[in-house]
Image (cartoon, rainbow, N blue to C red; front, side, top):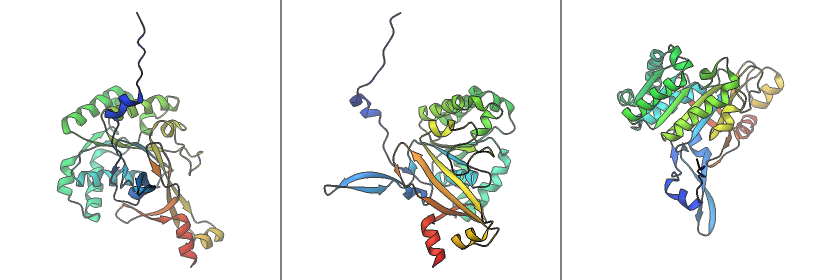
Length: 285
C-alpha cells in the first residue's frame, strides 16, 4: 500500500486559522495578554482583553495558591456572559461546587440564575471509571460539548487523571489537549505540584508534561513572611502571606512577563493588584 504524505502549504491554512481575541476573566490577566497591531506606520501593543481564544492554559502552583478559585471564577464569568461552560471536577465532589459558585456569584454581582443554566458539571471525583478510563470520560465530555454547545472547559485538576502513573502524564495530557483543540474549547487545566518541585516554576506532578504541551502556563505562588528582612521588604507583618502569579509562557500571543501580586478575597475570588515591583515600591513609600 502506497504511503500517503500529508502536508500543507501555508496558504492552505489561512481559512482554518482561528481569530485572535480575548476570552474574559474579568481580572488584570485580561490586560496581560496582548497582540501587536500596526497603527500609523508603527507597531503598538493592544491588550487582548482576556485569555487567548481557543487556548488551553495550564494553571499550576503549590496548594492553597488560588488555582481552583481562579478556575471557578473564570467559569462563573463566562457563564454570566451567556457562554456554555463544561466544568470537570476531579478533586471536589460536584455538590460542593454549587455552594461555592453561588457565594462567589453574589460577591461578584453576577446573575446566578443565568449561571445555573450555563454551567454543566462532570463529577470525576466519585467515579473511578472516569478516572481510570479516559476514553469513557472523553466520550462523556464530547456528549456534553455537542449536546449543550459548550465553548469553555475547566478541568480541576488534570493531575488527578494520572495519579500514581506520572510516567504516563505526557500521553494523558496530550490526549486531552488534542480533544479540547478538536472541539474548539477555550480551556483551563489546573495542575498540582509535588512538594519537591520549585513553587515558582511551571513544573507540576508529571514534570513539565503539561507545560510543554499546552498553549500557555500561569504559575500561582505564595510566600509566607517568616523573617524581618522579608517583612521590611514587603512591608507585611510576620506570618502574613504574599500571593503572586506570573504568565510563564504562551505560544499563541504576547504576554506580560512580570510577577503580579494578588489577593484572595473573603468570598474566595481572585483580585490581581499590581506588579510585584510596584507593590514593593508602594509599600516602601
